[in-house]
Image (cartoon, rainbow, N blue to C red; front, top):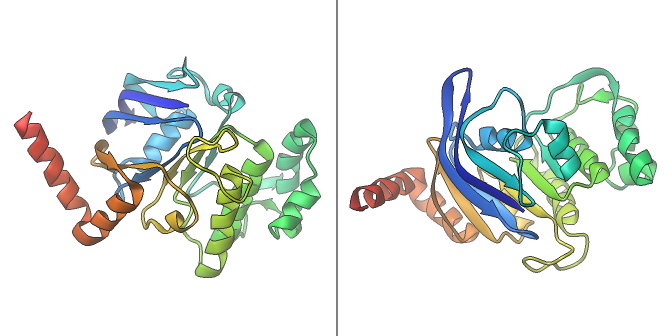
Length: 251
């Protein structure tokens, strides 16, 4: 579904990502761990095609097609959707106006979808203006539900969400990825996703297949999500960086 090869990215001449390579298979849920400032959000923004993220080297392939130079609208049409960690407030644009473009195209019932996640009362409000952290997350997930992409980029879905709203947000994401009681890895009904998490709390709601650790703008290691999370909690990211440095010296 997604393949990234030796990616180097900069913003305003400042390097953010270097030699990043990773893959997400069809029907696979992949986790991206990393400390603050590691470049995780920059990677998702680059995959989505935000113009201020300049690829200086490397390739991005989606569904087997080279999208390294593709504009953001083409990537969205191909089936990539993103939930940003801090989406902008859009004053003067009602949430309903944004969503009705897609619901009309996909023949969806917007009122019913909004009601199911307690977002019906927000449809006439300006997008994200005055929304709480949990309300912003639900708004973003409602937009993704309407868009119905083939591949989800989720940037720290736990961020700014209180414990009461976390269960609702987590269950919404699980339903987006696979709308049935149980989904196995590579299930044809399961959507592929790349999920950033700082705390690992989202793993309580997702059956993740693999994980990568990103530090200092580069991939340090990969492996089982729960095992890596346990190591992060007990040893921190410094141990991962030391391990990477030792391997480099051996090679």
